[in-house]
Length: 128
Image (tube, rainbow, N blue to C red; front, top):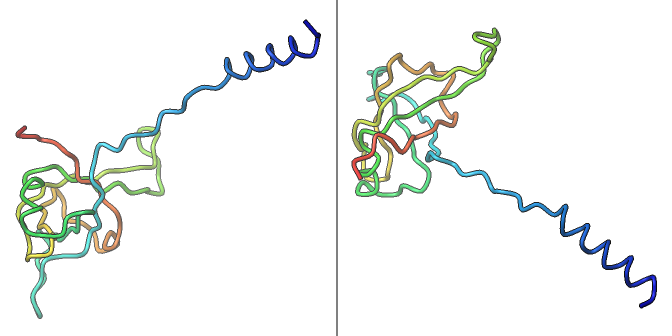
């Protein structure tokens, strides 16, 4: 057997040894966008915030998200417990209109700075 083929075999086996399959990260939440407070022409209801959930287009699609926890993750200036990231928690209450927007209630009212920002609609608590 020629020497060149043995070198090629070892190179091929070495490349197989080092090729590691990368695992794709799995998202355990649905993405949403905070639209703003529920409001009329002159009144603003800061206790109820409207959220558009990605992939939800009809009122019927919102049914599986009712009661789910929702998180707004943001970055603050000062560090608390070795992290600059903070979370505000809320809950999906009900549908708002026919286009897949939901009304949410938060433990503390969402600041207007968060309007247009992404939030995470967690897939728990689950009734399945």
